[in-house]
Every structure is written in structure tokens, then in C-alpha cells.
Image (tube, rainbow, N blue to C red):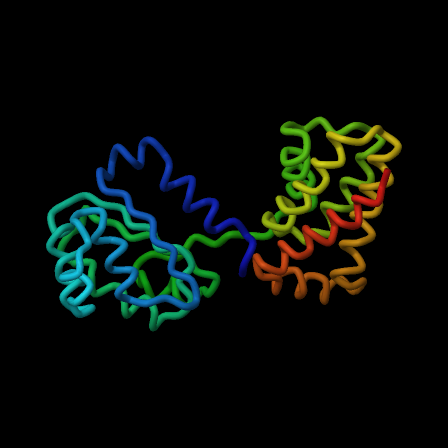
Length: 239
């Protein structure tokens, strides 16, 4: 499921000082639905060696062997973000030797079967939808930097958080819109703009709760960006 915060959590792990100390080699690779195996392998290899024309001429199997040789006896953490299908992981795992127990590969995927296939000995970590209370807390942190919503905005804020259906990504995107108007408008104008945001989200995602959830989950990052622009345009008319 997109928008739950998988990449955000993986990013926190990747940047953690204790993790960096434990794993001298830390590499982040974004996979996505469309990728070329050679590009992924070259992105990993550039952490160890210069990528020249000779390297580009090598086959995928040769590149995989080079990666394996570089990491065979080293402690490493390689994060592969957004692997879509089992076959994609099958194509990539040939570069990571099973003999090195000190090396770790962390993958994120919106599909449970990918995570289950990648490690049959350990259950995947599941990300869950936020509760209404958690959604409201996150929205406050995004807009105000702390749990300090003015009383006159609290009811509207909770309603907006509810419309986001527990998806952290949606809350962060909408929070960015609310922040702009909170910092630039007086109280009355802010209330009016927040009410328009609430109404616009509800209209955009349908009135039916189940369909609203389905639509929100189905939004790609591009569509969420379009929603953001729509809301900004709508709010620009508020004095």
C-alpha cells in the first residue's frame, strides 16, 4: 500500500548514526516499477570503483559478480526502495552473496508477497494506517511543529485529518498546504481557508468512505502533487 511511510522509515534507518557505525558501507538504491538491472548494479558499483566505458560494456552477470566480490567479506547495508514484484527481486539478489552473514539488504515494497519471498525466515514489518488520534497528532506536527493547534482551528483540523484516511503521506501533503495559509493569514481568513481545504478533499475523494479510502490509496505521488496544486490554487482566492 502506498503512502504508509515505508520509504520514510527506511530513510530513518539509513541515516541513523548507530546504523552507520555498524555498517561502514551504506548504499541506497531506488528501484520503482520500471528499472534496468544494469543501472541498479552500476549504481551500487560506483560506491566502490570508477564507472567507465569498459564497465558499461560488461554484462549484468559480470556486474553482479563484481558487486559480490566487493562486498563478500564486508559489513554492508543496502536499501532497495520500492521493489514491485518477486521477479524483480530475483533479478537483483544474484549480486548479494549468501555466504556473507554480516551484510544486510533491506527492501521496501507495497506488495506483501515480495517481502515474504525475499526472506522466508523472518516475517516482514507491516506499516499500518494511522488512527484518527495519530493522524491528528501528525497533522499538528506538520503544521505547527508541535501539538499546539489554536482552539478555533481544532475542529476543522481534526476533520481534515479524518479525510486523509490514516495515510501519513496524505497528511504531510495536506499539512504543507495548511501551513502556508496559517503563516500568512489572520485567524478568520485561516478558518475560511481550512474549511475550503476540508471541503475540497472531501469532494475530490468522494463522499463514500470506502471509495474515499480506495481513491486515496490509489493516488500516485504525481496525482498527490496535482491535488496540492489544486488546493493551493483554490486557496489563493482567499484574501
